[in-house]
Amino acid sequence: MAGDVVICDRCSDNFVVKTSKIQCFSCKKYFHSHCVRVKDDCLKFINRSDSVFWFCDDCKVLLPQKLVGVVPEKTEYESLKRENSLLSSLNSELKCSNELLKEKLGMIINSNNSGSGVSTNISSNSQNQLASYSSALKNTSTNKPGLVIKSQGSSINNDDVLKDIQKHIHPGDKNIRIDSIKKVRGGIIVNCENDDSLKNLKSCVNNALGSKYSVEQINKFNPRLILKDVNLNDKQPNDDLLNEIFTLNDLIDNFSLNEMKIVAVLNFNNKSNIIFETTPNLRKCIIAKGFLYVGWKKCFVNDHLRIIKCKKCHSFGHTEKTCTSTVKCIMCSNDHDSKQCNSTHRKCINCTSNNNKFRTKFDTNHSANDKACLVYKNYIQHLQSKINYG
Image (tube, rainbow, N blue to C red; front, top):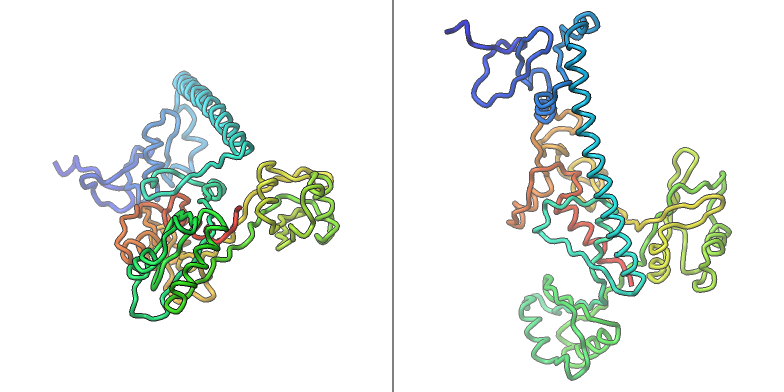
């Protein structure tokens, strides 16, 4: 019976239950998949395919000689024919999906042009929905004017502040339309439907409870846009470039030049990406169009957010220069450099830390640079909340 035991030709150990193994197509020897560094997804692909074969290191040297006559011509032809049929079927499905996406995009653009807003909320239930950076930007939450109301003393918590405000102020008497209320440390944030409601609420709080609470209006930043692949011809962007953009894109009649300013220029090869800061109304006009004419080229434009992420611990909000944490792997979250990681298991360090700190139940089975990460989505939402999209 001992002679029937299959062992790994690399480590000479046998194969325990559920241990993945791979067989060389030429010498027929078996190997542990981790011994020859074959990942599980690659192993599954090789096992399913009829025309993809794996060779060990010893057989690779003799590959040109050994490959002759390994696969019969008829079998290879049938395999390629079968794969071609599958690819054709997949291509048809992709074309159908593409047409549906185009139709849906047209409905969204028409809805935006007609003045009806499209809002997509990011919730904890959408863990399986993969979102790219550009799509995360489109999921902009409704930006309402906000008021921060905090207690002057440390003995009053946010629940007491809310009860006191609701006791002394009645929205119906002063035509105050409340959109939402969020509790923060020592106070609350009240988002109103419009600026008039915000002014009325601020006046009421100051008159009735001004000695007990500090009242501050949330000042949001103007939105920023990134203009891609601009050919500057060794010239520095200046007011002449802005004037050219306004003229070529019919903006000069409805907007003034001081509604747009150049924030940064990102150079690469012979082209540049230019980051602009605009007013909310000008941003809506440009985003609806999707591109701007600049010189001899039509350049595409998108919303831009400055995402600050540490390359050492992979947390958001700081860089590696100011990081006080230990080095973490972006793939498995262990204490080693990401370039040295050999693990096939994925574990997000950000979702893991969030679960430990706030007792959440975020999915951690992904890397820290995955766009489906809920911590990443929440960070994007946090940045968007500070911007006045109008």
